[in-house]
Image (cartoon, rainbow, N blue to C red; front, side):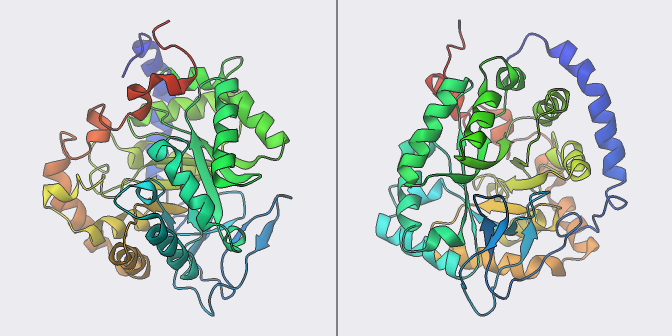
Length: 373
């Protein structure tokens, strides 16, 4: 990763990393029993999921089924109940999936209990947001917790991207707005700089355009720890953090081992992603898709976001949600043993080791400033 102040950053991380290691050994004392979400556990809502109302209270959604098939967890300190599986937004905007089929798939997922919708301003040139906006019509907005992300590092560029997201989604506000791709050591500095994206979040929240705030990143745990450290110094509260959590991550530059314990201690909602590493983990031929999802769901996450582009993949997600709790400690240890050798170099997590997944590096104009200046 770029950044000339690496040695200074490493020294600054020492305390955070030490605390993370200590926290890791004390996850049980913090309320995690090895599965489910910290301090809450899974539950099923008889009258359907709930979303965050504009007044900040948790409002009950319309009756979606007599009994939901999907377990629900609490989104950190927000009190909002969300499905343990979230519907990934990127896949919903792919050209191979017809818009009509995508809307039917989205509705099927919601009717069966998935109420967390992931998205981003940059997904498929905005097509993912436009399609989800159409799918939310007809009463579905009241059943869904809507999240999207932005790339702008400046206040102006971030607010412009938010307005474009709201226009595509055809909404007055989103429930969660996240700073996308916290992947460079300097990204936290840009976020908290004068005229930076942190100011955009505060302004958008005051204007009622967003309710909760978070950040995402896939590159290195140290960058997440730096963002959390700077948030504490700036008295800025994140409601959510999104990061890779999978069977390979447990062995290599591990968000699970270094960042997850800190989030659990701070009661910040954990959004897991890349449970299959965009199919790269499956290419290792060490684990099945079901094992990947079950493992991710066994961690103290609020939501595991996964790409769903067909009914069979949707069925797979529901099967994982129903069965992950049956995994024993021996089962989990067996999954980790199978992946340890393949995970050592990061080959099957290319989002950590290559620039292939760094969309803001491929499109620096999205950042709102000239990185070369």
